[in-house]
Amino acid sequence: MSRIVGIDLGTTNSLVAYVEGGVPRVIRDPEGRALLPSIVAYTPDGILVGEPARRQLVRNPARTIYSVKRFMGRGYEDIQDELCHCPFEFLASADVLRIKVGDSAVTPPEVSAHVLRALRQRAEAFFGEPVEQAVITVPAYFNDSQRQATKDAGRVAGLDVLRIVNEPTAASLAYGLQKLAQGTIAVYDLGGGTFDVSILSVKDGIFEVLATHGNTHLGGDDFDRVLVEWLLADIRETHRVDLSKDPEARQELRLGAEAAKCRLSFDDRTLLTLPFEGFTYHRALTRAEVEGLIGPLVEATLGPCRMALKDAGLTPDRIDEVVLVGGSTRVPLVRRRVQDLFGRVPHSQLNPDEVVALGAAVQAQILAGGITDMLLLDVTPLSLGLETLGGVVSVLIPRNTTIPTMAKELFTTSVDGQGAVDLHVLQGERELARDNRSLARFELSGVDPMPAGMPKIEVTFLIDANGILQVRARELRTGKEASIEVRPTYGLTEAEVARMVEESFEHAEEDVNARLLIETRTEADTVMTHVERALAQGAGLVSAGELAGIRGALQALREVRSGQDRDLIRERTIEVNKATERLAEAMMDAALKGALSSRRADEILGPK
Ligand code: ADP
Ligand code: MG
Image (cartoon, rainbow, N blue to C red; front, side):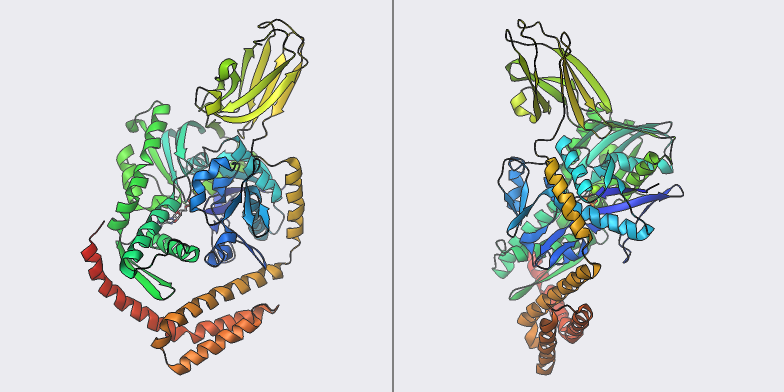
């Protein structure tokens, strides 16, 4: 029997896990890392995934795709509010969203497939055998197209996606396996790009999702963004330089701001040092300062929490356990506010980055038949219905209905002698069809012409365990039938998926050596860029002899960089690093001195 792995396909980071001896475990890469950054870079030398892609983000911003999960299963109109924050370009088109990469374009599921394939290869290397089946998690708020797009990505990566599971549900499974007997839980998941809160009940080993709410545009990325904006303003003030239009500088700031934010989860104060063209920016940041900046974003998570409680018909004191999920729940302010709202200390025994993947692995084990005493119920995130006379929506399946589920309703015609009936399937909470999301249109034709109101058309909505909808219409007098599996408006066509699967086979044949060569070259490029920048600023800090040494090492590396000899490139990269040790030290000393004198400027400006 083939193994089934659990995958957390995150906005920021992705992980793969499996269950061994009843215990879920995350599979690490050879360097011991559990998190694979969900970043894919299209370089002239080839495609990079994960850490190597992240490392060259600064040099290749327009072709390095991150946070692609935000775009899964969405259309060009859906994403207008995102465009100004994005360093990569989209192609305006009516159907599937495409991201411009040089002269060609890729779809979000194609990009995600690279991440999934990397995780699959990691698992295959770990087990020493092929891995072809997976359970993949998605935010509870994902609609049908977004779930389909995730399944498509799995297929392109050569994975049979057996089940799509809501992330908070997976997290609760990971905890449930360990200890929960009975009660009501709130799962608060604040990751890099999305926020979800779910209210679950657990009884006798059965999980039920009572309600879910959230915001697919709120997470640690937004913390980083407000921090970057603040730093840009500070740089304008202190250095009289405007870096806001410089994409490389912005990316550098983004990475620096994120690292500082993470350090401030553990320390009260941290020092940010960033070399730019012509000057080095350094700034002491306190936790209180950053809390002041991200405070409104943290506050914005509390509304959805209250709404989920309301939907579940509960008050905060009825919640027995609060579970924290997602890297951003390491921020002390987040923990305090969640604790204040629910009136209890949240659970965080399991690593908040890993808990979703662990739960996905548990679900995989359930499907494999390894765990039989647990049933899993999920809910529909949005109401589903049909457009009726006057453009009004008739809801067949209300929001938060437990799935799998089925609903039937009788409709009739409004015009005499109608031979065909148009069915318009909608998703959303608004009264009027035009305000909701259009999922599909199809026609029940061949209805015998009858006076208005005579035909009896029975419409059935069927949602399977993955949350995917099938709609069937039947005219009861004649038995005429039509049905449709709701293909999302922005989904990929079968042909496109097939083409991508084919292309992925070509990639699979790609030599491991070729990939390693690309990574080595990328590393060399990073080092060269940094050293050149350091030379531009710090040349005066070391002796002429040392300078000549550095320039010589750089030149030697430049000569072999585009060659085929990986070991030689690596060797010369190490040489460059060695040659610049003294320069790096001298620059660090200078930066520290600068930081001490900038403390005064800091106090004059006052905390904001
Ligand atoms: P996603 O589910 O969106 O992929 P993760 O759960 O992996 O995201 O969380 C990623 C986010 O967590 C990033 O924004 C990252 O900066 C943030 N993060 C990770 N560690 C810390 C930390 N120690 N303090 C604050 N934020 C953190
Ligand atoms: Mg997550």
